Length: 297
Image (cartoon, rainbow, N blue to C red; front, side, top):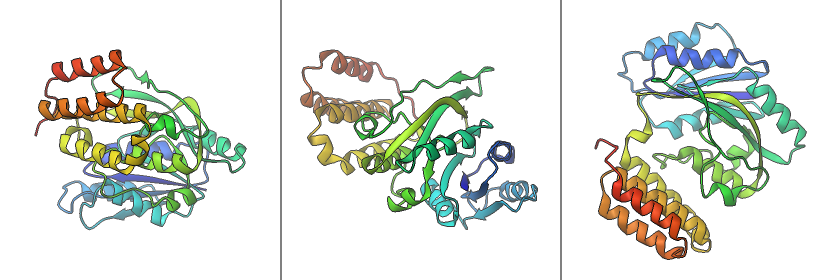
């Protein structure tokens, strides 16, 4: 069985329904669905979301509501605590799955003969402002992928992988202290100890819209990047390429938050770890200087 977990927070009933419909339409039908509502108690459409979930009349679908907003990580952990399936598959409330997602990922996991802890996939990207979808540009690695993953979260959002429930529980689930990059944090913890695999076929439609998103808050992104760097400080100190990559990206986030002095200090810190990489260092420096404020404080 696959335990599908949809966490929702202040999302329209229409979006939640779209996500649920994509689960019900799966060609693989051995699943349970846990919808965890993390909306504030005073959210106007909270009752309607509950009614939407319960309207399916399917005993495989459960609705759980927090008394008040506790954050995405706690909501995902609530679903994990309640799950009874051998595998976990998260679906963000604003995304949807292709019909064969679970079937192909479970099949890939079974063929791995217990060697793989997670199977991720390709995705389509749909912007609300665009008519057409585009294939998400990403890299693919299998096996022991930690050294690649520390450079860049090529796996993507929580909507993409199928994960062994036992593994996710062993690593402690999601860290409630992570204010952003919550998915990358979990993927790194898994990749430290286990192998992963992938299906290159796009099996998720990842929606980009103007609604509530963590990426709109620079302080949360800065907090998350710095927390991740601290978690893997020992590794980064002995791997200059990874150190440079992570701190250069942190510098860009500071620049986008209109904190140019801090961005330049962090750039210099990264530069000192790989001073011979003139092209990449120069590219980041130019981006920091030219960067316009992209967040509203």
